[in-house]
Image 1 (cartoon, rainbow, N blue to C red):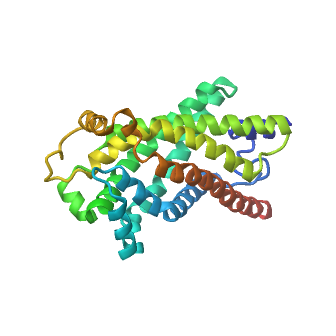
Image 2: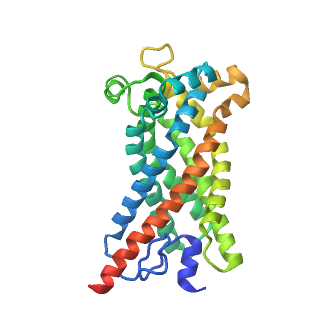
Image 3: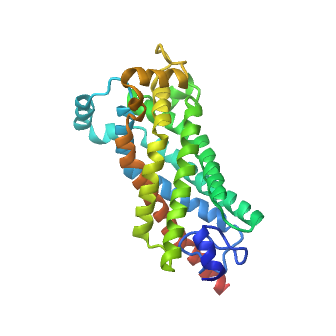
Length: 305
């Protein structure tokens, strides 16, 4: 299998030559020094595309997690204005998802590469730390852009309305716990599944198997992180003039428990399972494909230079 194959199985970049961890791993030998910028750009583009595709499900998820949710009200709004209602907040959220995905992937790649170079081998602990680093990067960008999305979806607020009346990091604490939990479990599950497949079969894990592995890992991660997402949504949906506008995570967690017991914390899980496993699986496949095409083209240009 050799060095390149080992690097692919562990999702790290070999020391020489520097090669992207996507579909071009082991192929491109003449990449420019700033190839990481191209990789970051690909992550942003793939993130924007997947957000637009799945945004109506985000709207459904947000409404399910708000108090007094009614299917009759939701379907009525959908029928009266399907695009305008289901795509509320899509611009601000899509623009936010692009740097979010970039920070997620760069946090993962940089952390796992640094620790692997330091230790000389991959390990479960390195995967966990890489996932935690990805979670921090995700939460820093996701918290304010999700606030804008939730306010637009629930109350029809515009960006300037939220900016003038609300701290942009309302709900950051539960968002951070959610993203740390989700990313640590997701990256570990996905990397372990892909590595196991490639070790058993002796070749690169095909895209449909990667999608399946990512879907399973995403479903487990999504289930574990949903309680904090429900709390985060309640905090962000509380309007500035409302009686609970300054309440924190503990208050809204207790409120959910009073409404329906422990299972109420998993309110919106069904919608999240429709969104995140498929979204992230599609995102990683798109990223690897787009990155492979781009970096292989750069490599070909380098060969001709």
